[in-house]
Length: 104
Image (cartoon, rainbow, N blue to C red; front, side, top):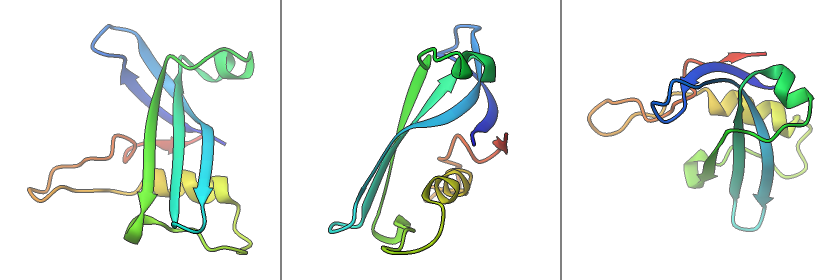
């Protein structure tokens, strides 16, 4: 389970395309989920156990907290779906870099 999205790494000309959740934590009491998603050169480097070239931290709390304690949903699958949802600022600008990502 991962996302496919080509992104230039810090305008360096190096492109990461394979994004996988590398850390996942839910605080059920506070209703806060924190994840890190790592950007890898490609799927092969991830499967070879290489480190991500970049990590993106995401936090979902309040109205963005989507998990239910004791639910039967696959928490990682739900997280990948949530990662692709649009999030706009007050001016209508997209804040979510993963909105155009594809499942892979």
